[in-house]
Image (cartoon, rainbow, N blue to C red):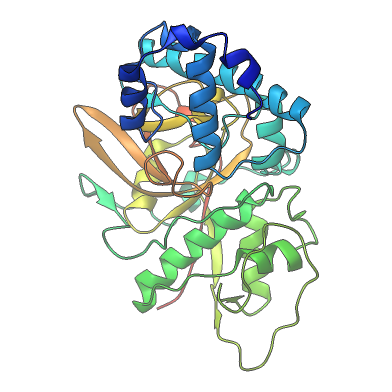
Length: 354
């Protein structure tokens, strides 16, 4: 007997076999096309909740906790439904975060060290390494050029800064050497602790400094990710390392500089990602509300245009089930210097000699 069986037995008349067939076909759990009555029927909401929970391996320790999560799930579902009625360029859908409140989501999955960010000196456009670039390709996608590893999952550890930095290093290493090597975020979480704080946040520039001053970063297979902080493991002499020679900052709030850099390599960027639209992004060119401050580290891996909408391709670290197989296309040319979600406010990228 399920948690809601006593309630559900009183609501049998609110559904039909055709309704169940419709839900069975909607295996991606998108609520696009569901009628308003579907979202008012407790049985159908419970069916969706149970199917979603099975899909994402959800387990609750008590009935009270499950009831609490069901209420949050319903609230998030209603937001997704209402948003999809209004938006034109992107859409939302259910994902593994659907039973989390916004506050819980922020505390578990966002980890950029914004306190340190406020103390950072701005980079001068005159010092920008790609400032003299004149001709840019209309589009670039470093995934197609073999410089991006598979989408990874940070889990409920605020280590986004490590994933952002590692993806940028993986990219420049492939561009320079021709070898795409998956590198260790866990080493940064465990060992880069002088300024970064493991699962409690950090900054990509500190990670670049660590990699540069410690002879390089180990491969992921040599130091696998465990979604929590651990004790730093000493490097062995025979362990292969991937090194960089330094890093550069992007000029703040400068879209042209971002595109110039992206034409040459993947870029670590900070964005605001605490808004519910970002939490449940499913596809399209995102131009919705993100939040009020930069709080999440991601990696820009290209740019392009579709249906007259210019966008930047961003690799996230919430697994391949989020967004467009782990990616989001974020709209550019929106008339704001800081860009959508503040994407131009904090950018940096590693340097590696040929």
